[in-house]
Length: 388
Length: 81
Ligand SMILES: [Zn+2]
Picture 1 (cartoon, each protein chain N blue to C red):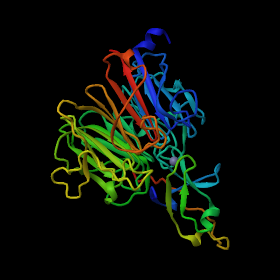
Picture 2: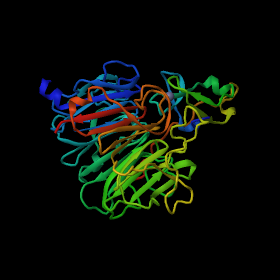
Picture 3: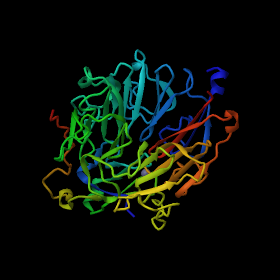
Picture 4: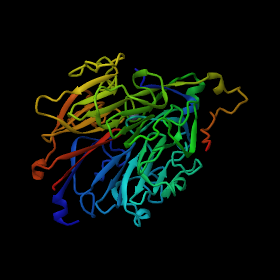
């Protein structure tokens, strides 16, 4: 890549690295953000999706790069090997990919024309091809051939799909449904390898879908949040999407394995569940976050405000790993909290944090006032800074 | 404190590791061997971190004198379309 490209984007990664997911070229954990030379020869990366131990990157022209754990074929290169360096997914080169999602060990890709492709572990039917085979190359999900897709969200063992346009049934699910994460039936459906309609979202304008662990959620255009799957904080599992009792319009959602982060339109961050967030390594230390007041109408005190914007600081972006969380504030700070055993908080140690801490990046001054973007995989994190 | 409780039928048999596994939030896998289960062990550990799982299973299913093969039912993806 030429020097100009290199200067347009800075990439940092930290946390668990044993599968090459940090793209540092090594398999070591990093406890402080490690600067990586630009990953892309195709221009600055537009967005990332981080999974169990692999990463999918989108380039400006709709190309796809992957790296990290590839043992189930989730990198889409036709083999089941891991890579600590970014490689373009050649099988998708004829398509302009606009949306991607990395699950625990599987991957989803959506093209500009609404086609959806999946690869990786298919043991639970999470690839949607009607079987439980794994795929080493991205394979188009035939079920959606005549239903254009807009987004895909890959969880631990399940996949959600959001259709494009205004349709009666906007969301579909496939893969494991053991905890209700597909939302396809009030009965306990163990799994389905063919897409089925997620109930309870009829005629809603859904703008984003999310999956991680055994959790699922969807956000509607008016800021209503629907959740289904594994219950938060020991609550019962939900088999049909349920309107979340949140007292404010939600603008962004990020799911972990035991918590959900909600960003309000005012720039405040709330956490659903996560009663052991930041206290996994040391159970004595239960979260005593900045403000533990529950929001109105939540008798179980299931919602905690974790960043209450001090006067003029607002959060603009959120990301959730399995057991950690990251935010970007409008003054460009990167903050993390949660489980830190692999250095995934990027604070220079392996401690847990129950309250947000500021992450320092080296060489950051070179990117001036560019706004960072943060992405979290199960036990690791990435930051992109792009000069406009 | 156990990270989670998981039923043996939700764990996957990993031929390479010769162990039942379940995803760990660190990115690695919680693991427990058939021998562990025979001995009544109910903790599955992750080789990469300090977390552990509690495995819920019926010990009789893993006794040597049991005629049954000590394999849990594999997840059977059923298409109900
Ligand atoms: Zn682990």
